[in-house]
Image 1: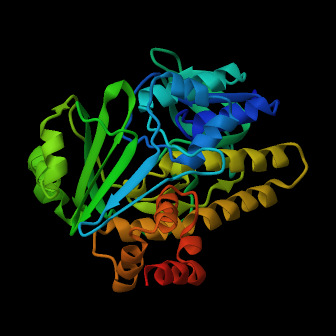
Image 2: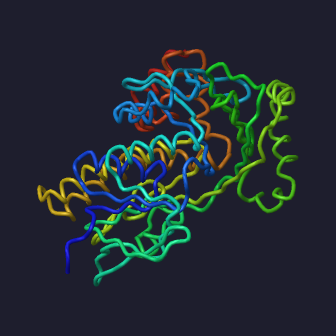
Length: 402
């Protein structure tokens, strides 16, 4: 068989696929990235990039382009539990702020960066199927809009094609740590709702909502209820959404003085891990792992996966390490990093009251700036749950409260 036309084909060119393709091309590999969308275009997303994701954008040399779009920085996270509010800084190693660029903005910047790195980017390209040689994936079959069907071959095909990944389905990727949908969430954008650099989250029994600033002077407001109410509430999304907001009269007053600029978009997603590699294939981003959106960590998870996967593929393709060994290390690193937050996110997304011991910790953290900063960093993915809820840290918080 003739040599493949590419080293790697990446299926999907948004927040997981474009960085994967870009970083591989920067290492000298021949990369094709395809996406059925054209850019700029929108997609359902909270589009919040916590500080670890901002650090990645800086490493890749594209953060300045995001800032140049006028997307405002978010320097304060506030979590309102009713009787008290925890307000802190989400700062990471180099980034002390978050950003929430619209996906029309962010995805276009990432796709352009991939193209500038030498990636062959084909927008408006639909992958019809992956091509096998025995049990090994060797390429894709698909077509551009209005074009003829073509076959492209590569040493590795990376699925960065999201929740309903065609690549993952084709290889029947093993799933584990699965969770049913927990939360039905809907969001839209309001003008005239200034946030002054704040991310605000409000938690009430069986209801939650949050707001943060984005491009063009708009504020994203997202609210939700348990998935068990999805069917009964979907006939009047706006009415039920406003009922959630009315649980906090002060914010409800702010919202009613503002103007909704777009229709509501919604989502309810399952949680899962998929084995992210096999003969001739790999998975990144939501294609390989997904959790509820309530902690808004999908973008930075995709960025981290892209870097881990590229490092492993480089080791394998260069011959420095066997493919199976390199990719198993990628899987182990991914799972170890995200599993604690995956479980915590599921607890939050259940919208059930925190257990008494957690309520005691949160109440004790109120007014303790170091503890509140730590809680903000926990929710931003800067520190892991085992670090914040370690016996040593918990005892420090409780002792300070006494």
